Length: 185
Picture (cartoon, helix red, strand yellow):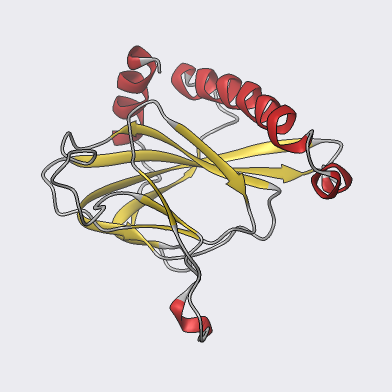
């Protein structure tokens, strides 16, 4: 966790001109979603991109080494796309997947102080992994795994895994950076 980087990222994200309230065709509801963060000269985003490249390499070593199926599907070259999501009040992300990507993830820049508290029995603000979009009409719902957001935490997972966030009604904002590791063809 790099608190200086998180402060720099929070300031830079808050000023992004590309932040759009609940853009159409995105999973963000009652929150803001930005355009691409990487490829420019803004130092906080460059530092994050470098850290994410290292983390994705480490993820592959840890997860991919033990699975022949993952080894067979690992792309030989990738690019990392990133965008910011700023949620306040009852903002959340609908269950969704990233079909173009190999690995997806979220990096928490800033979270409300009460997100991880004992009183948070409803898991407000948590990342939910595994719950399928209800509109698919599955007869038997899948078991979910919940991740409590903590500033500086990076969570990586296969892009085909449904993921969403639980709305939070706590004071404060939650700033995160979504990422996709996309195979280059």
